[in-house]
Length: 521
Image (tube, rainbow, N blue to C red; front, side):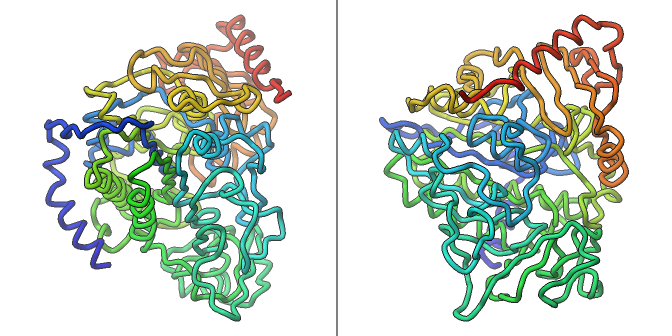
């Protein structure tokens, strides 16, 4: 880890400088061709988790620098309050409920079917080289995956020229890297198999140590769901056969993922590229590199935020070093709201202090309340965005499909992305008017119209509220009664106005169902 240690030491010396610097990035000679596009997609990062959004217990100078010279949005949203649905929507421009998609197990088939119009496939049509690096969690193959051969279909079949993946997410098997759809590091004679269960107490098909059989081997205690096979001292969801040369080490994520992203940028410096850089941080298990341990007083969760910030800075440095920063559109955001206790005991709750991961908003990951899907979002593009701005324009990550289509000129049938709206002018800060209305998805549905926020009644209230509140300690927002909030005067969604304004409640329910009943045909 010498590479990281040296870089982090330098990073820490410059922390105060970058946070306070007012010097504008030096303009480079803009390219004639289309802009490069990078989406930094962080996992479980809340609205209040960055210093440029008001956090004081953690310092994020590299992300702050993007905000200091770009546009910081205060009303930008992921399409869902959980990861797989948000990722599906980001890449397709459609809500994931249309595919009945939830949080996928690690052996799920590819959710985005080949032939579906996606951001990478459309950008390829207009000359872009495309890559995904990091967490995937969109499924691979067609079911019954043989992890010992090329896994197909995968990213290549939906538009990515290059892929380096954590196949699902760090808390579930397979705990390996997959590069261009082949598991990295498998030796001749190794056979990698995976098996899933939501409760590790009753099974162990491969007989290797698990969190149930060998708790003394664990670095973090876990719940029964996360107590399957032990990899790198951390038990995971599910079981995996012994092919240990291919097993990952969590502490290596910042170096491994960042190096692959940097290499892709350098190799494509002479043509436009699209990089979807999908962090594992700050998802559980949180096992930051030793260079970041102790970077905050919040324990592994706070340290993982600093690690994510460092990775962002490394990628931005490579852009500068290769003369690419000026004409690169950078979009920094998160897939859903924050969660502290998500299966592992890592002190996230005990060491939270005064930090507010969701900022002023109610709820978090899994929640229909604003904390579940109102995301810290920054857009940076020196060639076009020449002064720092704060924008309250309403937009959704699924709008990137239509908006980037407008920017780069790719053509698509409106049936390909029926939920995406072209809000390019708002994204680039040319106007503060974005969407006027928007569907919201969690374990129920909601609808925004202006400052009004409607949450539909659901009979899932008892089942899911118990799980979200009692297990995750998050308010899910599910109720057998409809809810209506005035976000302008009540951003914390504390006063339900549904009975006071029944006509508004009925109107938003009707508008919501119109969107839900849209068809691809």
